Image (cartoon, rainbow, N blue to C red):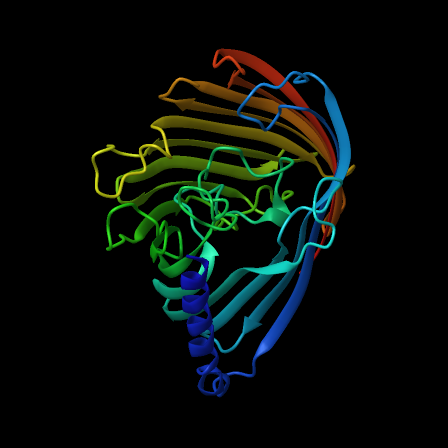
Length: 374
């Protein structure tokens, strides 16, 4: 599987670079290079991220972690041709991690803009039917992305066999009415290992959104720089798996002090029938997912308190998981440098050693530092 994707990826990259001389004749290429680093100190109850209940579930562990360390390359080859590339460490670097972790290619995306309403993108890129799965990590309002807005696609072992929400494929995008109505539609690799079948279906995604005010920059928060009110929805499907949902994002100045940010979404996921030829039923249970976050940025003091809530209702024996919490961000240099303190609680049903199900709540405290230049 890994060889399959790498071979296609290398072939795509070589094909793109053969186009460089012709594209460069139209406009002298320009390049921007950036960095993004997220590091945090944490105190977390032992079974916070576990699916089983241990003997010391209420105990707290402490440590430090560097979990994003990215190099970003933005290359404008011509007026219509663009490449975005991004690297990432292969694993978080902390007390229980490989401190000599290597780097990998996280994104490698080539765009050609034919018209305002049609851009073709090819390579390895973010794939999601909802807004939260497509927004940028450097502009998050909460301490991190939501837990359930684009699940099952985080690594090679996950059901959709992705890499941090990225997949390899081709995507069409564009906008109408001054970009107020925007769309995305793509075909991607998705899962390539199905039992007892030679042919593999591709993954197909689509999303449509409408911007009532400024065009959505896909930030977690804009710190009052935009006046955004956008709503959208989309679908993600492969074989028997279907993920679909709707979302709304508001970020606008409110009062003399600063600006408000609100983000809500609903998703429905279904792994399909067990009898389906390309079934995800054993991997992705049927479920409803709810998400909301709200914050206010005080411009003069550069502080932003926020709260969030998430709920995952799976139609299986483990049932419902709730996540709630809040934090305080200090943007002393905007997105370039900031500090975030947060507390998140998670209530979920866990299996005990005797195969019983118990409902428990676990806590997590983060003190996170972001450094970004792009």
